[in-house]
Image 1 (cartoon, rainbow, N blue to C red):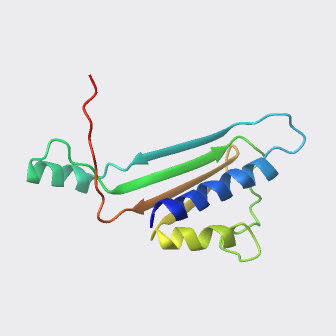
Image 2 (image 1 turned 90 degrees about the vertical axis):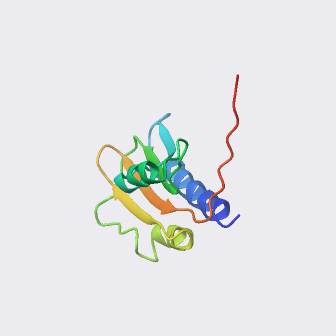
Image 3 (image 1 turned 60 degrees about the vertical axis):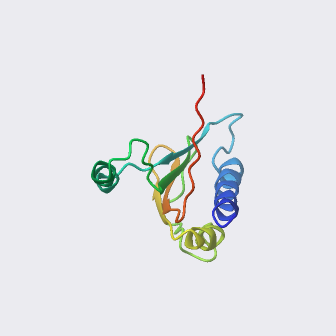
Length: 125
C-alpha cells in the first residue's frame, strides 16, 4: 500500500493531464505507459556476487508519455501553481526522482526504489 497508493496517484495525475491538455483540436492522440525494473550495473554485480539466478532489482522506472502538443518551457513542474503540486507529494513519498522531457510531446520518467520487496514467482507451463 505504501507504494501502490502514491504510484496510482502519479499515474492518474499524468494521464488526466494528458487527456485534458495534450490534444487540443485533435480527435485522437496516443498515451503510453511503461513500468519496468531498472537493471543497473550494481544489480548485475550483486546478482553475480551472491549467485542468485532469479535476482530482481528493487529499482523501478515508470514512464508516461504522449504525442500531444507538449508542456511549454515556461511551465515549471516544481511550481506549486502548476502540475508539480499534484506530483510532488506522491513522488516524495516514494523517494523518487521525476524527469520531464518536452520533445515530441511530453514524457515523464520517474525512478524509485521499493524497500523490503517481496517477489513471488510462478512457473507457467
